[in-house]
Length: 287
Image (cartoon, rainbow, N blue to C red; front, side, top):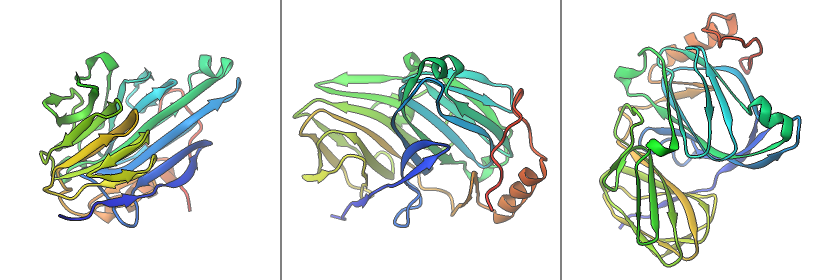
């Protein structure tokens, strides 16, 4: 039996929002299509304040935002203008280039709010890296759920556990939100080649070994894993098929061809990029 890999995330702040980021890491660059994983830590914003991710670009990936608490306004250069609430999926495929904004809505800024959620990036397959950008919103009620014997599984994106999400993923994907009652067990099958567990809260044993909250455990390929909840647990499972080759990541850009990264950086720096309607402020290219 292979040994699983434990990733302890690094703490960062993105435009004032504290996050924990286990992916990418030096030990593991990706799990299935997942090349980036941000846990937006539960944060209370006083009246007059909120998260404000100003206009910024992407290529070669899909972003997925999933909230536990709070609300986010998503706007993009396609003209999308969508409020995202707990349990919803905000899914944006960048293709050859898109810009977007994510911020606390004005009404929530006025009264104060709390935000807690996840944002992940999924690298596009090589044949889809340069497709036209797109956006879709999937309300919480549209996501399939299994709730049996004290284990509730919501399939955020992809498929697994006899559930299939309506989110239009581009490659085999597993992204599930799991809540386990104390003394319950969940077997993670080998349906997907690569899999990892991120523990949001609670006391969880994986194949008999304790996993600390806010750590990610990359499971050995080809082996089932047994999750046992020693207390009420909240976790996510991510995974899928391995990437079809290495990816270069630079700032907000992901590509199999480094030349596309250089081109995207030059375009954004020169202002040669689609604009989010009604937005003038933007995050400049880091040096």
